[in-house]
Length: 380
Ligand SMILES: *Cc1c(COP(=O)(O)O)cnc(C)c1O
Image (cartoon, rainbow, N blue to C red):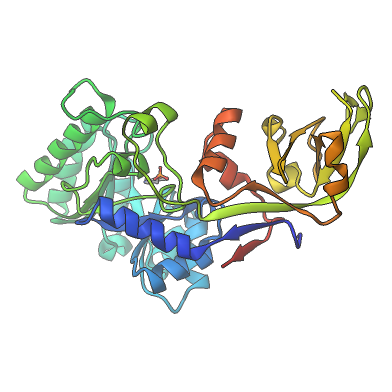
C-alpha cells in the first residue's frame, strides 16, 4: 500500500460522463460495464455511486467471482447484475450462486443454453442470450440459431429477458451504408436474429449491442433498449486515433488521475550506470525517482513515458523496477525538486492517458486495468 501515490477517482466526472452518454443515446437504458474492478477504478464504490446517485440499475461484470463479490459488498442495493463471460455454471455450487445472489448468466453457446434449459433449478433464471454476429468470440453461432429457437419452443420458454451481441470493430469507422463494413454486417445480422426469434413467438424484452465505440458513432442506439458502455463512462474515447479525428466528438473527462511523488533526486552524468542492468545515462541531468514501478502496474512497456514538472520534461531512463522508476530531467531543474513533490502520470483531461497509450502501442483499457491494488483509489 502507498499513501501519496494514488489513483484519484472523481465521481462527479463519472456523473458528467453519464449525462453526456445519455445525451448521445437519450432513449437507451444503460447497462454499465464494471468488469476488471471497474476498469481499475474500484468496483464497489463505482457501483454504489452509479446506483445511488445516477439511478443506473444494470451492471455487467466478467466473472461469477466478481459478481458474488459485488453482491456481498452491496447487500443494501437493488440492481441487475450480469455475468458476461466466465460463468462457472458447471462448477460445483456455481448455479447456487446465480440463484441465491440473483445473478444473470449471459448464455453464449447452444451447449450452455441446453444445460440451463435442462436444469430444473434454472427455470426461474432470467434468460439472457449473447449472439455471435461475426466477432467469433463468445456467443451463440449463427448456425445454431434455429436449434436454439427449437429448444426454447420445446421447453415452452417464450421470454428472453435480454439478448445481446458485441461489436468487434466499433473503434473503427462504422458506415451503415456500406454492407461490407464489419460492424454493418454484425448490426444487420443481429436485427435478423431478433426478428427470427420474434417470428417464432419468442418475446425479447431487452436487447443491447452498442459498446463505447458504437455509442460514440451513434450506432445500434434506437434499435435496442440498452447500451453497454464501459470505457466511455470512465471518460475515454474508445475510437482509434483516425476515427476519433474523423467523427469523434466525445467531450467527457477521464474519471481517474494517477499521482505519485518524488522519493529521491540527484545529479547524474552522461555515461553513468542507472538501475538494474546498468542502463547508460544518455546525458547530464537530474535523476528523479518516483514511487511507481511494475508492482504498481507501470510496466516496462511504458519506457517512453515522459512527465512534466514545472515546465521541465523528464523521460524514463533505465529499467522500471518493481517499486520505482527513474526519470531524467534537465540539470537546471534540480533546484526545483523536493522529496515528496507530486508528479502526475495522467490527469483528468482524456488526452493525457490517451497519448500515453498511443505512444506505447497499448490501449487505455490496458493501462487502467493494470494499476495494481498497491495504489490506493481515493474517491472525491
Ligand atoms: C467489456 C464489454 C463492454 C464494454 O466495452 P467498452 O468498449 O468498454 O464500452 C460491453 N459489452 C460487453 C459484453 C463487454 O464484455
